[in-house]
Image: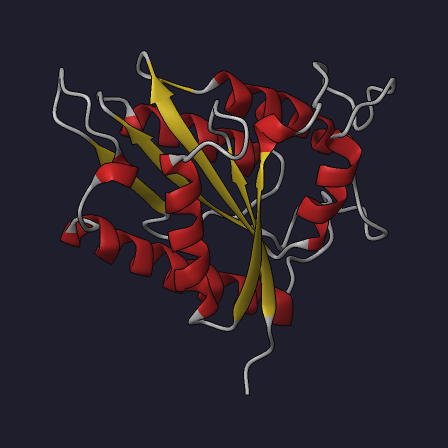
Length: 203
């Protein structure tokens, strides 16, 4: 019997709750797919929290990032989902990445980066091109701080150019997107389980 892993999805929509969000929808679809591989997951909408600007673990003065950080560190898999605006990831996603910069200097009791043995996948949504560009930025940043990226770990949907259809308004999930969700979830769960059983060696 395989052990249960955990995942945290961070949705970087610009819309505060309870507004409907395509990013939230994709994040939940990825969590649902992970659950089929014995991964229990939870989602947070970053914009609902007071995440102060900065690159420290705790910026003080009511900063709510430390609580989110604890949940992120406790999860085996990070699901990072962002909308596309003007061909770029959202400002909320950038704020999260900036706060993750603090993890570059964090190590465990073996001297390894604290996020070694953790896995990250990404979801990107928008009505314009930019998914490959954004995935590259996300994966480079997440790799830098210690996350391991599985094969085909990016799931994206871009609507028709110059149109206004949102992912959440589609009648059904496109076949290619649904397939990509399953692949990313399957590979993430497999890799996380391998790293749990055999962590990276200490330097």
